[in-house]
Length: 277
Length: 334
Image 1 (cartoon, each protein chain N blue to C red):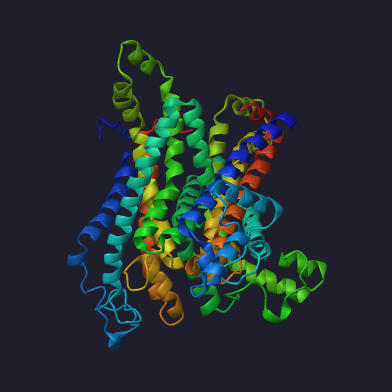
Image 2: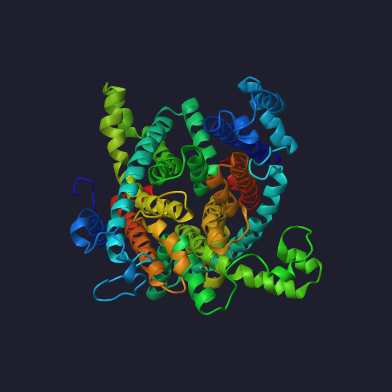
């Protein structure tokens, strides 16, 4: 932590939101032990029960325990978040780094491509990609990864462009360091705080977008214990059993909020104010 | 100024061209042979060949691409696989519903976002400033579908205060002029329709305005905080100007253009959110059409929606940039 330069300022809120996200991650990892019931086991005789001591979050239309489904849903959502953020952040960093470091035509080409992707609203593009790949959870994750790339590419490019002309890079070059060493030892480490910050906030976007696709019926579908798909199924019973809407909605909101605020806190702690704009 | 507009226009062509190419690429990858899809499985080979020639599918790819671009420019956007009707009129009809919703949302979010962001930046009251910061974070993270379902269940289903589906009561639909029902009912002086239209707009607008307003409030706050730290603001205060004058005449004048410059991006985010909100409220706009089209594999419709939203984004950002350049001369030279 000290090496990344976490200051006193922002350290406390970072700790709080890091703890919150760690709780969600722990829930996801320990889902099989935490969940009291099998998330897919139907018991029609106890369908649509409200929250009780036996079923904390009530039961759904097939009598499945909602609490168990939410806990298992954390696995799906977090995996979706990690996979799409690492994919898009990886590709985006490489593209943004290339554009920023080489500038000129490379920069022009990559950034126009990113502009083109950014011109299409993210869910519209994700839906179009799903139309080609076929709907489903895995393809939904791929679509979300693709949609998130320009965000990283633009941020990293701006940072690398700013660093590239810094004096210490010039100094490193004049000492005879190779390009590869300059990129690896000087430029990449200097973008690390930015990447970490954006990745944390990106988790929130990725999780919410994957859930949105599930909700629209384009991502994860019916029996899967995925929060978005659970919400979509609960719409029919909104009047009878509002708890079916409440708990998955809360789960998505709390998870999204924690990662989002972790990103905010990290950016305060890791990035000196003069680099924020 | 004219030079700036021309330069800005020259920048959007590669983007529009790129999106069109991307869309055509997607279409070709997904359906290498749309002919078979259109005439159906049982069609004979002869019929298929005739149709391919008719649609220009037997031409080399670059000729097809030129034809596609020509079609897009002249308003021939192809035919829906499902309804067999031309895509463009259908899209424009649906777009009116989305435009009505998103225009209203944008207006509401700008008004509230700028107001709250300004209060958050200039207030000395710690509690207010904290409440606004926390509220914007919550507004940003709360997913649109969760929020809309909550509001539909609360206000629509349980309390029965507002309608939960559609744009206007069945019996009240005003005569079609512009497709924007608020304007249509105003033109025809159909007051009961106007009331019904506004009633139907309330919840979807509220749902969409919360995230958009939150992000505008956050950007306004950050932008103003940056502006307020400048020397000229200190000078203005030092020479004894009232703090209202400092905020409205000096800080906002310089702090708002960066906020307005993001309207293009906000619009794009708004359209994403509209997809979800339209599904919840059965709002017959582009989002609902897109979800149906993806499920039925109706590629011409999907491609049309991608194009139309990308064009809309490009045009909106162009207009916003030009407006910013008009108010802040420095922008022209960036």
